[in-house]
Length: 308
Image (cartoon, rainbow, N blue to C red; front, side, top):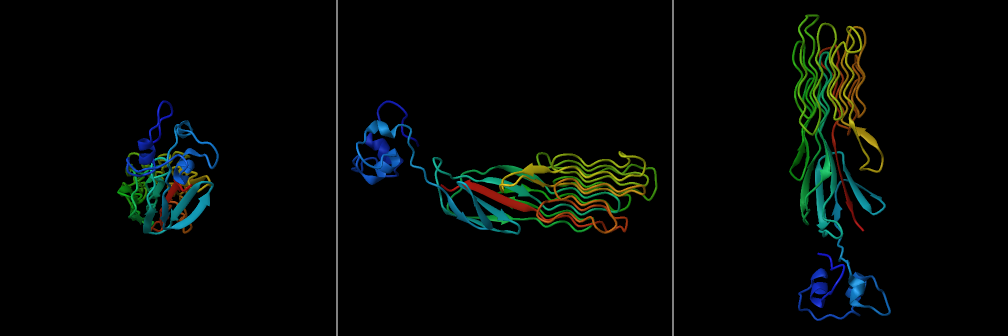
């Protein structure tokens, strides 16, 4: 709790704020009281305690740790454990901001893969214990990406780009379908997960659609002209690490007249052999006429909290 901002403050309330029994004998001159009231020396009055709180800050370990001002940032590029060594309180810190990005889906025969799911928010109250962190791997060609998770919050792996004449897979973002070797049928993309990503584009005739990204759906085939592959859906930016970075871009589609670009956020281009998604972005793999498709990029989990 926080001490009252006006009126009477009792020593009982001061004790409780300091984490002591309400009946503990204390005086205004005690060092703990002076620290709480912000009066290091000299005269001190009960009114000096108006609105004051005994802030306790969380301390934790795990991942790659950096400091930015009053905040610690833990970056997990592979699975591990976020261990809260000291639990804080609401006056200091007892929650963490998180970014959870799953692995991108692999590209298909002509349709791009879907980006890994993208989630960002603030955790519930964290206790002094270990929390499992899972970082999903990128999917191989025509394979779904792996899920990423922290504290029971899960981002779903990106959907695969489809094999020939097959719809794209669903996931965090959906993969695109792949055209049926020149046939006239429209092959749909897979759906994205609400709040995590968007759907993949459709394919037909001699061009493939693109995979969905966290910020936009994948482009349908032929949207840029006949037989052009679609551009991958754009990802979303986050500054949780201290640098504005795009994550979770969709993979580009491939077409006889031209290939689609991967979406910002690590999405791979539609290409012959150079369209892998970028590692630790959740970007999806681009399409590849060889039939195997390109690999999706692995995911990432980032946790940030105030430590002082």
